Image (cartoon, rainbow, N blue to C red; front, side):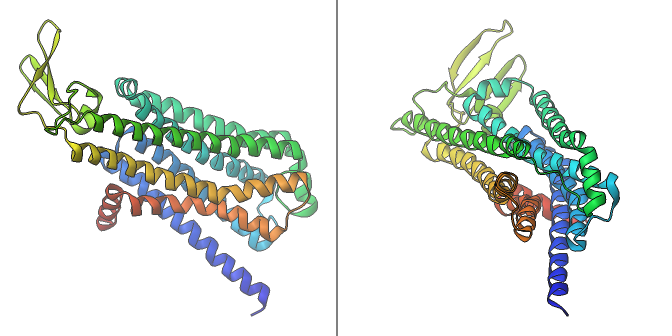
Length: 353
């Protein structure tokens, strides 16, 4: 076997593994959220949107790219060439915009919890995801509309399917499709971590000598996540993990705070448990964001260099492109390793299968 053929075989196997694992993993994520009602919240709907973009990359973008790379020429015709490039840009843009949406959603949940919980989350998710996908579609279509004739002409002459090298477009598109969103995501993440630590410090400072919070009426917004809500007759009583009091509402709508000996006592360990859970969620999200940046940063850097300073080595360019595609298969692996609920859901789906 010649060295060139051996390289092609290794490439083909690698491309096949990346594609199959990505399709399998992202399908599991989508099915898990669909089948588990307790997964149906804003955060997981954004995760599903991210999984859909990664799944579409795996099904519609990776196979044509693998054929193109192995054949060293485009053999699928001019229409599929333009469609493939449009989908490639669109779905990869959707991935990073989904991550932006997730980061902003988590920021709102932590920094403005009252506003976040009093608004119907489904409406906000629909609006956010509509913006993500419409923006991604526009960004994907724009270069194809501008350079249709150039792409077709170049394909006919060289059998290469690619956009023309334009320094201004490459720099601007890379900046607004990747670098600016990355900066926004990092800022959101830093603010979220700072807010969580500040919240822990404030709650710990309210712990009295008996282990009960001195301010018994604070942070009622945690009720639907950590507390219990009971309804009996005309009286509704909310008990919060962070609240050793209850609120009794009479028929006239007035509310008064009442101490109840049955309410759970907020102590050091309970507050730390809540904080630990929140930090675990942020850690998983942080890993997803870090892996995304590590996978895609080399491509966007090479893309700008290729347009501004001259051609980048073709083999290097192939490697950085597929580094980006690898990101599509990694996220489900992160969820299964770092999130117990997703891990249980995946096992349940596979057992049923």
